[in-house]
Image 1 (tube, rainbow, N blue to C red):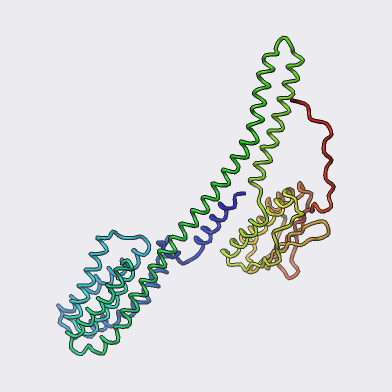
Image 2 (image 1 turned 180 degrees about the horizontal axis):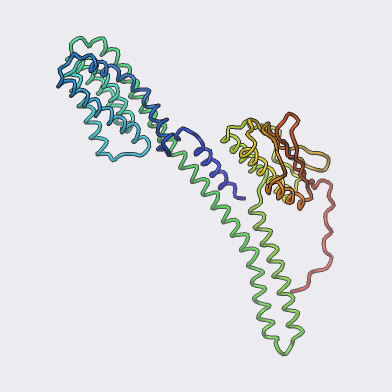
Length: 408
């Protein structure tokens, strides 16, 4: 089974279908970049104090221009550190230079322009938590808070604001440090999951290689031996050579059957895998999935019939996701006499015409497995698909051959 491959593809499709960027990853498009920028921009509301101070006109023209330029540079560097560095790490030298620049800007703007600019120290603490390792951040954040208190003592009339910013500076810095640690953990888990999926896929390929080697090794050796034997019998013993050629044909046909069975078993889907895939696909499409009455383990269900029902489930869920416009989908597996019935019901628009190629091919596949397909409108609107396949309960085993097959 190729379960690891489709499981990984389904998860990636689910992540690609979400509007917000995944934790610890850079935005993939403008929409995700805008969403991330809005989340960061919420915390820029505290910049209202410096902006209000500039708009009041209490400073000279030179001081106002200097403050506006300094604030633009500060905000730009802060956004680069928090917005870009959390997705793709910057060079260590660039990070240290950027941190040094915003520290100097925060101190100079606070001392020269006054009390409202003390809030910049809080953003410096947040930047420390966002980009510095935890070991350095636990020292840098308190030191920055102490520096903020020192700058506040130099500014006349800022004692009340200074005391009010101590807790946000510490709390914001350490909270951002925790977020950074969570981002690193999420990246590690994502990489580990991808590695596990790849290892599982490799294990399945190795299993198929072992099966093919075991199936073909003996058959090809026997074909080679009998070919050499037939060559030595010609032209003196044509009848015995013909018998060897007949044996070669029989062994070749049997080897071809064995290979087909091995490849079919490798590629045949299972109900367990398709139920998990259906749950992921429906969740990614925003459709409520009701799968609690769909138990995947049925010991009396032969492999061919299980494969046909698994294909039916895959086709039905695909149609629900792509064409139905449904908000809810229910999947049920139940026994009806000597048959297992798979029922997929949705509350969408229903069918408007003849069956497409998917349902036609599905009916043919079920017919080959001695099953049948039934479709129609649901009891409360929508569309219902019923796929039935026979169980092997009470089947009489085939008699064993009493005579050996021809050949060596």
